Length: 447
Ligand code: GLN
Image (cartoon, rainbow, N blue to C red; front, top):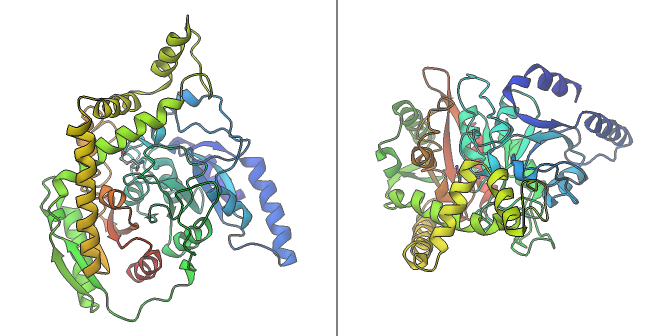
């Protein structure tokens, strides 16, 4: 704990943590020490973990990096966080992210961007940017983030660490601030696949507080033996044809494919003809869900309330206009538009149909292959400010990550080297729903 606290202090400029639970982490460490000596310590004893500012932790500030939750303290603890604590993990602090997890660069945080530790002029990715930087810069052993369309995997790729999003419904969302409820899933950012497997294993499983969570038993992911059979891997060829793909990223993924083949795995190119549709489908559906989920921040129940209001309606309006940042407002408006009576069928219903098609095609491929492989991101970490004037360019950065959320399947990003400038590159593996065990076991071979 002391070492991490020192690292955090030395790297304040990275803006990875919004709050450090210094005294509390020390106290927790002492308790865990005593348990270790008594031989009663849990599975995560001594793991020092940071949590993204979208996870409830009783008595602690919870803000989703937004001003609209200014001053809000959580009344209860998220199930996932509760389970970490129950296994004697040490929670060291609350991490910076894009406001309400909307973004891919951490630039939408109302507390300013987090910086990539490899090059401070570049973004760490997002929305779990602070969480990824914290692992990259050794400010904690692991981070817990959320992944609605890539928010764990993309920053992991930009920071050269492991990022894993489980199957939709594998981990309870109780105590996770909702962005788009049919996409949101808690995920992990770690240095190693083993740590990721262990953390997911501890957090996953039935929970009476989340009616959508899966009741399936949770296998011991961290104990899964490395398979001795060669795997069948489908490489999504279309991902190599998208115009935004950076050459060095492409070459790095190509080398991984060649390596897999050399190890005796079957690697075949597969067609996924919907790549052009996945970003529009994702943004129609997630903004629709977000516009509904964020309706609750009205100045009455949580956090911030405008002081300039003259009556109830102006209190709602001013609170929301002052409390939400630009990108969140844009998404609420987009979502409200696609749900409005005149446009509902043209956008929302259509996007639901396309989501179904994407899911069916993805499941179909995963019936033939153990894993699907593609880059995690089209580029390496971009410059701070580079995409802020062009939201569409920013949205297109999500082209490879949103498929897993649209289909509800697990996916992992693994670091596979750097470009000429030393910026990390990630490769992504997806597998069928509830295939976490094989995904972790296979990923171990790749790292
Ligand atoms: N970049 C994507 C978005 O802005 C993903 C965000 C996420 O997974 N929370 O929606």
